[in-house]
Amino acid sequence: MTTTPDDLAAALPGRPPVVDLATWQTARDELLVREKAYTREGDALAAARRRLPMVEFDGTVEVVGPDGPVPFRDLFQGRDELVVYKHMWYDGAPHQGQCEGCTTTAWHLKDAVYLNARGVSFAVLTTGSWDEVASFVEFMGYTEPWYSVRDMDAPVGSDMGHITCFLRDGDRVFLTYSTTGRGNERVNGSLGLLDMTPYGRGEAWEDNPEGRPEGRNPCWSWRSDADGNPTWGPTSRPVPQWTRPGVTPVETLGRNGHHH
Image 1 (tube, rainbow, N blue to C red):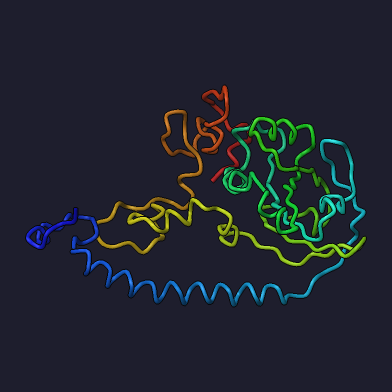
Image 2 (cartoon, helix red, strand yellow):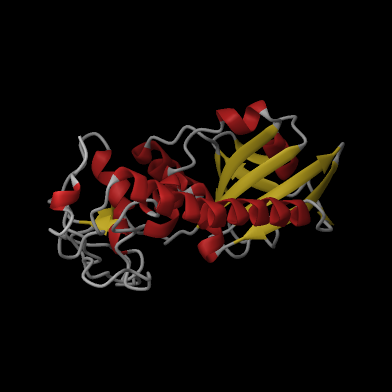
């Protein structure tokens, strides 16, 4: 049932105003006009993205995976297109000390079945040594392919934290697109859902109406302790790690405080 007009005066502090369904529908339809314009602009950006030039590089350069060194070209798995996520790495750190932002992104990229159906392969690249990487991948339960690109030059190695796209033409390999920072948000479906909620992401930078819950620093939700409390301290793990079988509380990040 919906609220009757007699109840409308009872506004809830810090909440959206209470209206009848018809009034809500009118406001919703007004916003929809802007949302459709936003969608069309996104389509136009994607069209421009497809028109970017590309850079050729040596596809025989070797990356290290579970079967040892393999040429980068093999990551295409016979397909013409490849998307990779470049996962940051802290050498020698325990699982809980690895990059929380990259963990958040990679956790949303656990299944490439729809990419594969469109002729696109997927892999995760990282600068960690393979023995450390293999242990982390097993712990996290990832089933998509990971590879170490330690000490390699761009566009295969070098800077991490990027989503990068490649194209193959026979034996030739090309870099076509790369993004970082908030450009990576596109693959994090949780952020898209939070943007639809009345309280948003709960981050201080957001433009929220007066009286809504006070926002926190960006990325506050990426780490928590064993009780689920958000913290970037030594008792924290990247949030998805608490879902892993047998995971235990921790007392150190094991990386000399190199966190936010």
